[in-house]
Length: 72
Image (tube, rainbow, N blue to C red; front, top):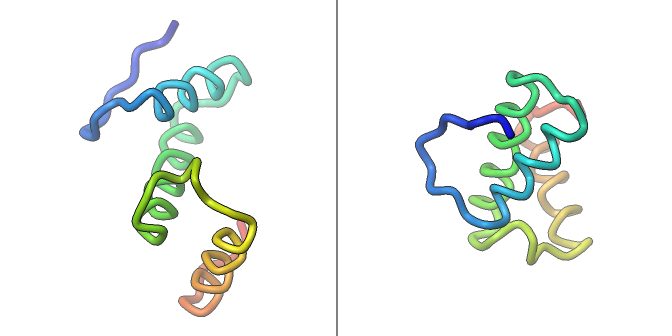
C-alpha cells in the first residue's frame, strides 16, 4: 500500500479514506485535495466528519456558497 505524508495524526477514519482513494486510483494531488476538504468540513462541524447528518452537509454547502467557494 502507498505511504502518505501529512502533518495530522492518522485516525482509523483517515486511514480508511486514504486506502479507499488509493484503491480508486486517485492521484496524490487529488488525494491531498480531498483530505484538505474533509478537514475543512470537520472544522466546520466541530466533530468527526463521519458523524455528519444530511442537514450538516447542507449547512456546510450553504456556508461554502456564502463564502464564495464554487461547487467544484
